[in-house]
Length: 337
Image (cartoon, rainbow, N blue to C red; front, top):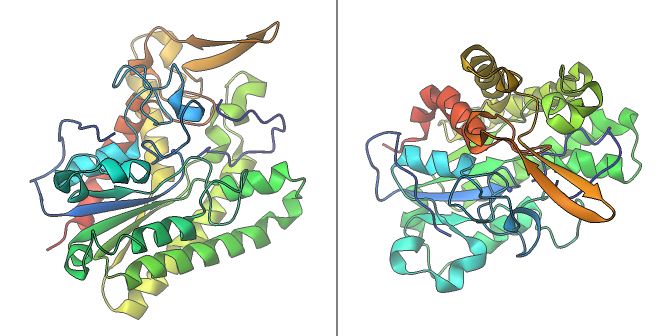
């Protein structure tokens, strides 16, 4: 919704995601742990420019009741990972100049909607490498000891692939692009490791063939399995790369978060549990955009708390919470001994 794209081949556009607290549903509090977030709109909590994207109504409709820079009606993946670690959501990098000591002690979020490992839709969207340099330049705020007691969350949801197709790239080039993307992603997380960060969680791609933008042409009846296969290919390469990195480092620094399986589990659960027939289809978005005579109007479903997807590519708060519950059993690896 935040950037309209006509070509249905833009399957990987998970157009990528203030300090807002959620009730911790996770574990014992680890108050000294810092969380540093890098990525796109799946994790952005306010870095996108004001008066655009997630900073316009009706984003933030469910929480906090107004736009907060999150690409959802409420909380996103960042909030739930922070909750699991027992800390409040780290401040968005954009607001660093207004941060107090307590806020800085939680870490910081560098994730920016639309970003990728390379330049994507807009040269002003900081690629992951730039986001990491942003952290590196905050040397006065964070010490080696801070990094040794920190967790990094790296979320790639496919903007490099979407940008490739938007620029008239071919489908035949996608496998080689995937290899280059994963290679660069590995370099980026090694850069994070070089700072001394204790744990690095890397998020795999979700089922890109299931986002509403990929299913709207068939009335949200089924996922596009060709596009899902492309996501699986990316994930397989990423998992192997992380396995190799852990072998080389001789310790489990790198952790893979299986977003694909978690999305499937969450959507299956919604199908089984939804009491209202309209919400038994998790592929249908809650929020849609209508344009009449040049006037933009957002249409919101009656029960956002029951929907899985908020807009054409982003999960709702309910969707993210369901995904978090599916991920939660594996998150104990994030805890620093």
